[in-house]
Length: 193
Image (spheres, rainbow, N blue to C red):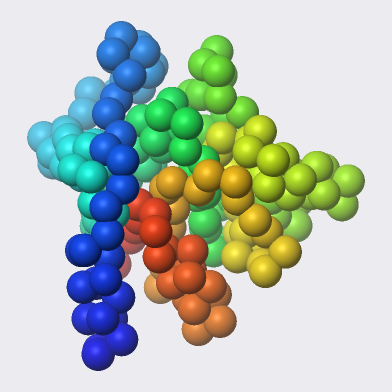
């Protein structure tokens, strides 16, 4: 508990450049959502986007049942951060969820000047090497992956937002690495529990 309090206090004192939604393009991106947002979902989206613009590291938890629309909250925050020039890492506990999120993000982000890649066991070794190099060079804007993203060999040129889906499914070692990644970046955690 003392460590959590220390980290929270240190993050509260840090400042980050405010991140604002790109005018026009953000509305176009939102219009691609094929469903009507619920009131709770609209509030979660507005709160996450507002947090990105405060100039302090965001640390937001979005809790909702399956079907609440947590992924859309994550996509909108990721879009805002990526369009502002920051890299976004979406970390999920399983390869199946990584593939599902990757497909969803890639589809929604197509047509925008953003590069989305995947990193998990479903990715062959050559593609994984290319993705790792592109993350370090800063040519990948959004990466969706499993704990493979938490490996010491992964470096980001300009990581600005970490989205963690179902953090409770990660082990102690992975949570320690997440804690290190979270030091100077915005964090959005999604959970159904």
